[in-house]
View 1 (cartoon, rainbow, N blue to C red):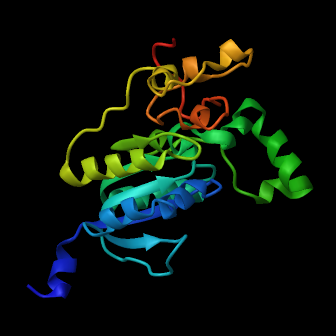
View 2 (view 1 turned 30 degrees about the vertical axis):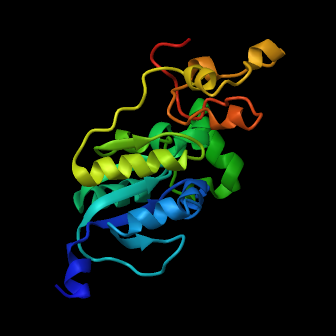
Length: 221
């Protein structure tokens, strides 16, 4: 088998960004050797952060960062979904709306006027939505930014057609496993008891509090 035919058999994976800071894509670029291991099994055909090439055929896996905040984005994500066998939402913006969702607490025209001034009606803007409120999402990778090893595991599951189950417990469980001193014992407020696990409590491991970026757990501690 030639190298060209080997490449042709690899799953075609594409990364896309919508309303976001693109910090999750930077986490992908920072995966190092773990990323190299995955790249040996896939063919990345689109990834604006690191390449200029475009792909005009279908995708085996589309990985989406960012929330949907205007009609153009809604149309674009629907087209990507139609071309994708599997779609992964990664990062808080894509999974739960993220920071962009703050504008939903206000009257939309008020926010548009504040941002765009008197000509605000010229700019397309709608209520912020996570990706799954617009198209079907097959896998979620929560976090702001994502916990890179989790994306690796989710992508492996997606390529093998296997389910990925996010732990149904709070970050506190991972903190205890990592032998962290509880922030509440230090007199500091922390959202770990209310936040979905799966990040290996990496913020607390590094001396910070949990900010709740992975979304609310069903059964808080």
